[in-house]
Length: 148
Image (tube, rainbow, N blue to C red; front, side, top):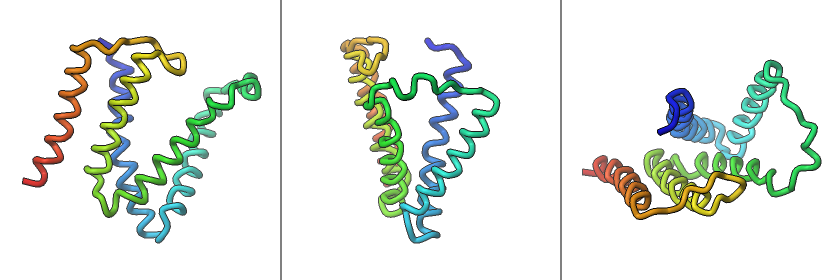
């Protein structure tokens, strides 16, 4: 079982994902442009990260020696923000986040199982597969309960 502090931080990050989706989707509608809302979000995020950098004093010494594929994270976060901002208003925040969560469960299991990107290897066992299926089923039931 993970330590409480990292677990609470990650719980808070998880709480923020649907809030981010709802806020940016609403901004996209107000601006009439999901891309415009994404640009505003990334500008605010950049300023926030820059302020955090004033305190953390990050090192960029290995930046240019880093493999190009590591910069794919920026492409993925842009894809997430653009897709959730565009799709959530018509598809629903709950539905959008449901599919994001399912995607996270599947990709996290694959990354852990194969130790991709330097992650610690955590093999897929029948018990772990059952747990992931239970989580996915629970997320599915929360969406179906809202339709009843």
